[in-house]
Length: 332
Image 1: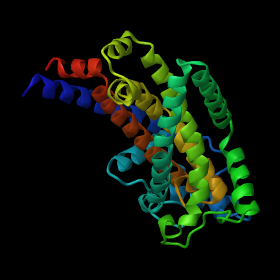
Image 2: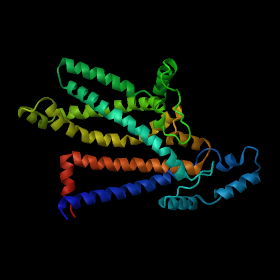
Image 3: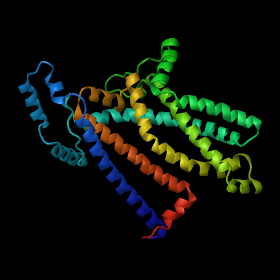
Image 4: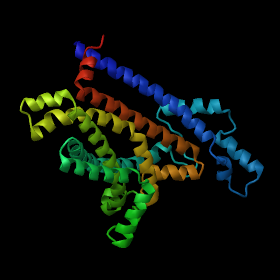
């Protein structure tokens, strides 16, 4: 086995182990959080007119009368085998609920990044180059930076409300809510995707652009770029061959770290537009005190976030020559 393969194998193995440990720690936090949710799941299921005996019977049937440590051990052991339990309301397997909802959320996030990444890279690169350019370039940088700050500082619910009022209510171009018939993909009713995608894409574009702008400005100030210029490298050749490869690595890492915020924003937007994704389902589960569904969704979202961070680490190593060399030279 070559040193390169051994170094990468060691790096990936250590990161996988770290990911599993982090997921286990997060599972404890998730379980503890559901334990302190306001209200009582047994009381919610039994109904407001139920007697104390009926509520106690429901608690026994759900296993809520068992010690918390025992319930956690049983839950995490089942989850490790792929069994996330059964939702209280509807008596559906949590895995089946996730299988219905996750594709719609992944579609939404995928479309958002499909728009946000290229637009953010272009805006950020333009602002970054402008920041070290002449008067016209600095003016463009200031204008773009002000727009980006305004977008980033706007809460999801406020931007969603503005777009809903303008595009759906005012112009009547798309429906105000993103409801689709049961068993139907949002792609079959594409107009329902417009407002959720547009809301999240504006915010994601601003985040990507700010990261790219800062990275490009930092890279342009390095002696490495000055040497490339003195060697006769100019224009797009300088950007594509030297600036962006060095600016993308920290941007990828920062975007991965912000995945949790993106998931939270997606949940808010899904709830506002009643989009049939995981976020709106999580909100409904919390309102109904459906503990297994809340736990299953939260654990799945944490796992997705950790996998994104792992993938970002790998990409960062590939994009950063110094780190790539360090991985290749790691001891076997």
